[in-house]
Length: 609
Image 1 (cartoon, one colour):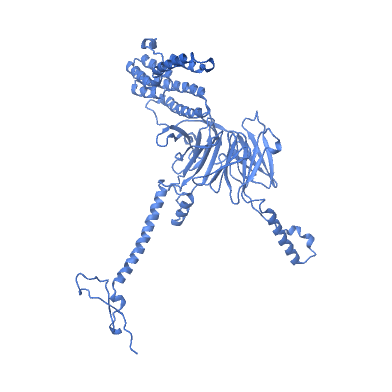
Image 2 (cartoon, rainbow, N blue to C red; image 1 turned 180 degrees about the vertical axis):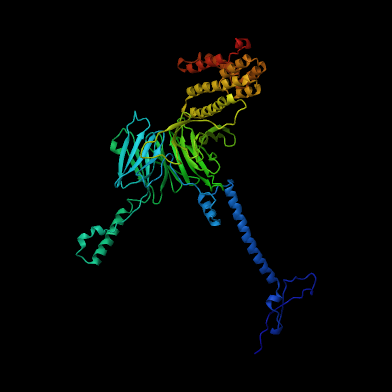
């Protein structure tokens, strides 16, 4: 038989052929060529070796590129670049897969403010201790006891209740009651060996069948009645209904565990392992569910406000936690402020959060620095109020030894109520009620050029911060009279410092202090002090600053003239209408009289007198 022609791969000539022809990658085919004269594939198609080498290089480069990208992502996360906040789970998996670095910080676990951890050597622990009181959990034989002792014990009697086979892990108290939560509820089906004594005369096969049927029956009975989620229980302090119906409880879905709880006036809330923020009313009605931006860390509430803290990113290389916060107005169900927790010292973590009696949010880190969330004016970018963390007290300088520390409880009237700890202990003894102490706020300012003015300077700054917080609360609670009283007190401190600075001849520094005054009467007093110190130029500048500050009052003169003309026109029209349509507001007339009295010009001679 004639052999079919074969197509043979033939090596092309390196220098032969047309100059404009194909390069080394071109191949030619020939028919009926001896197999002995065939070139080898590795020699004839030499570009395949080059491609193999390039593939090896690409694999090497790709591995090196992956390592560089991984290191870049790691460094960006460690350096705290948060242009994009990755989720906590993604960052954790990414870091664990890249390297096992012992020096790399780990995210801090969740905790409850002013609580003590579980101790195997003690049967007591503090679930919560805040402005309402303390909650102590006492373990007994198969039961637990919850003791609530109020701060104002002279007016409120202690509360005690007992539970069987329920172990509360989280708890908090508020104005209306206390909220408590357990861990995951397990469903353990007993084998029933202790109850098989009546079947001793039967065979082993019969016993196994009975056990099997009993397990099936128990599983069927428990399905749908005892989910595996956490149990949430709310204990009300007072009610206008029946006492047996005042409390309520509910069970979370399977696998959802409560990590933090808090309550206030008319509300309660919990954060769970599914990153849910669940709201409830004090009566037991469920509210909305909100996703958290990261894994929950802790929460605190007071009055109408709730603060929730969560992880934003993986900690820095030095161990500094990257946390975020959200401040809620639960009554109006709106977010007041949210952002990053920038008040953590280098290499520290969050240890306590809470509210003061004027509803200011405070936080303390592991280095003992207490900071406050302060309203820092209007936010032009977001159209709201700008909030910043301000250091208010550094407890490190108050320690007698490096092993001493302060365990925060609450903040009242600018003082930190805490438990002094000595000997390196981190928590007070829950078996006995610890003795508390108070530490006054003192902002860590630099040393002043004039040492005797350092105390007044710190007091002036801190009082203005307190006034700005009160101004925010006054807008919500309508306490304008209290705000005016506080403004008078703050201006007294500023004027006292103003006079001290004038004694040293620092007129520029004295003029800068004038911007901290709030009332027009305080400006008048500053002018008199400047003239008493023979600084007429300074008095003129303060007069100009007062006119700029209260220019709106002077502009009311033209407004009053226009309003009076409209008022007379309205009176002329009402004379031609029935008496039933004549409606003149006495409040408006009184307001015109008051505004006219305030807008009366004051001559310099009268001012000096």
